[in-house]
Length: 413
Image 1 (cartoon, rainbow, N blue to C red):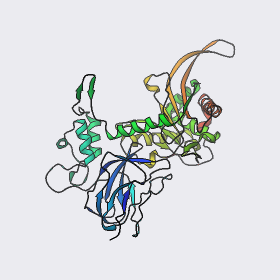
Image 2 (spheres, helix red, strand yellow):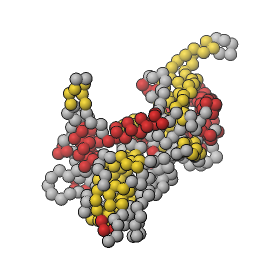
Image 3 (cartoon, rainbow, N blue to C red):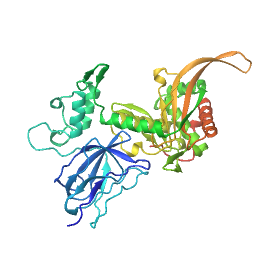
Image 4 (cartoon, rainbow, N blue to C red):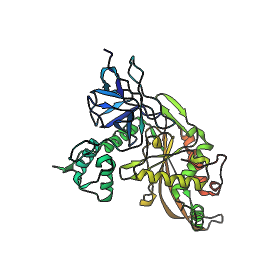
């Protein structure tokens, strides 16, 4: 008999080294067809379903739900030497996962955007294991929900929609001497682990600056008052400015990857988005190669998809820098932790009125924006960081060139 082939953790991006197995959709002994969902993994706070490209029968389950394993690690086996699983990413930075040796031709499995899963037979409440767990942790009664899957199967997004529409009490806390305790959700565990690792392994340093955005605010008010266009926000302008700065100083468009410095193509910029599932960081492609209106449209689209839970792993892959704006909450500065897999993040704070002397020394009321650039010292030195932040500040202080279309046509995605 041939040695059973392993179903392994796929590699979904250039810097992905591990994934959290959030949910099994199959069990030992199950027979699967092409396109059936095998399991769900959590990476970059994105749930990605992995489907089979060829039929087969599941052997042994080797990894339990909730466990984090490295890329290429065996998750389960195919019975009787059935075809092995080879993960294939959804984005340009993806690469196939390792697969166990087998004399049979490999049957691939590819991640895809969430789609309805198979429903169990019978009259009981039908829900995925992950949906059950999240509902239990948040005190959601499954019999009060309508499932979006076939035959009314309740999926994770149905539970999340209920939480967003009418937040329910969380799981019954355990009273302790110092307060209350509850189990962390799968997403919270992923965030905690990744950001802890980033802070422990990335040598952060910080460069601060103030940008006089008085002219920017006047331009924005005039453009937004013209009608017939998407309303511009300060975030839109900042993302565009960071993209232009990457084109002007490509040394900042690089990441550290297992002892190598990888310089990236394009001018991709991540954008931190507050969503019902937590903080997401989707990436806008070639943000520096487009005029401001196109950047604004791309920002609006990706923010909507993040808040609706429609992001894919590819949407959050790539880029060397992200932007995080908390200015709407009045904070004076934001010192951010670098997003894992990147080398810098720009923290944006609130606009504040200040008096500055004009050319004649007379005080003038100006509007200033606090910026903090967090950098990975393995990739970026202090001089380059200061040069980059100076480019961003100058663009924000003189934003009119952002209205012009650079060489590349189209819009970022």
